Length: 207
Image 1 (cartoon, rainbow, N blue to C red):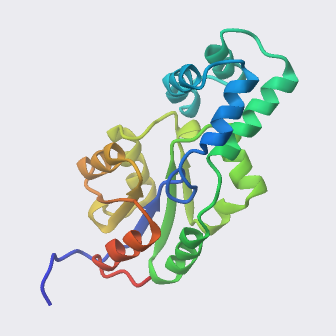
Image 2 (cartoon, one colour):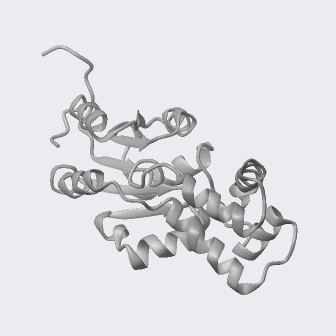
């Protein structure tokens, strides 16, 4: 048979947001902007500008939302924002979830690598129970490292004790896949479930 030749893949690593969870929910973005009495475009600019520090675990939820709003928030508003925020990223693609569960039986190791803050992590882990389907999980808020920087991929590879060339990383962001490839991993830019299945089959992974 023709085509590229790959070493046997021992580990598949999944991103969360945009892969397991559907893309950012714009309706909840509007709700968060309304809670802060901000224009949606102004809210989104501030939301993403300060996001890296929050997801990297360098600031807590109080400081993150204070930076966005420019003011201290009462506890009720703060918790409403936190709740809307993690729900905005956690509309779950059940087809991908079922695929991950199947991969556990056909691949040696299935892992999660996500840029994520502590509140969203806690919700996914404790309420949705989705961490249970992975052999190992790596979250930016715990590691104080972020995709697409080389250090986070090197950390994961060292932790897994699997050669980088025997790992496939799946993410919806081209920059994150580019970072993974620089660290020696194979990469798939996720678009949809059927595209992912086809891409995995090219690595001779049964799905």
